[in-house]
Length: 296
Image 1 (tube, rainbow, N blue to C red):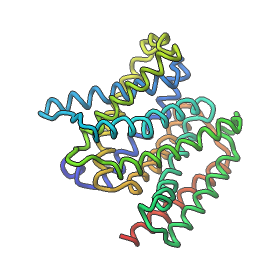
Image 2: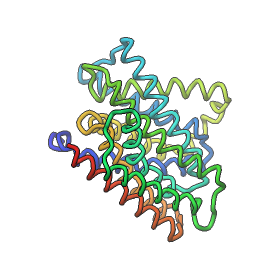
Image 3: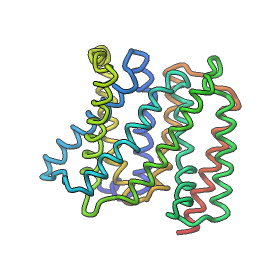
Image 4: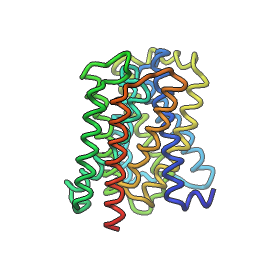
């Protein structure tokens, strides 16, 4: 465990694998009748509670200073509430595998935002990687989800907003990371903040009334909470040691897991153009990664 905690590549793989389980589990839950708002709450409340328990058991605590509270709630909205709502709304229409492909755009968009916000200086290879990634995204968007059930352009657009939100979260968490804050503290605090925001949403929309549906899928709930809790421990550790752009590459691993689970376990089928687009996106990610290594 100590070796994994110190390995940036190991953290990347484990975090990506755990993240990749989210779209398939989310599809099963939404098809069972759990609204996106409720399933997003399950993730944040479950993960936040378990992470807080682990933090307290180790003698830690969550700081409630102004800087940390700002971080908790802004990270909660940008990084968790919005992406999860988008994901779980789109996955029944686009498929778990197709939605997972959207994760692969996160590194490209994170680099683009880093350049636009002055976090990084642009270089030729990085800009070329961004362009290649967008070409792949365009091809994937044209196929509109599963081959047998093409989704409307509206749901494709919702799917494309997922990596935009993830990229914004990657940048925000880096530039506003509170001093003397550990990864587990930040993970617990931001998820509990997200749970509070989502609970308000459940009460306002009336979706809280369908809470009993969770009792019909207890194993799915348990699997989602366990995977999310573990994932965010590694997620924040990777953020602190790898930076926002390296962190964003978990989308590449997550997409592979989502595609595998969607095709093998959920019976999803995608056109050849979707697979070609995914490979082109992967090429764009490889280019942006190499560009950042060259900068380093």
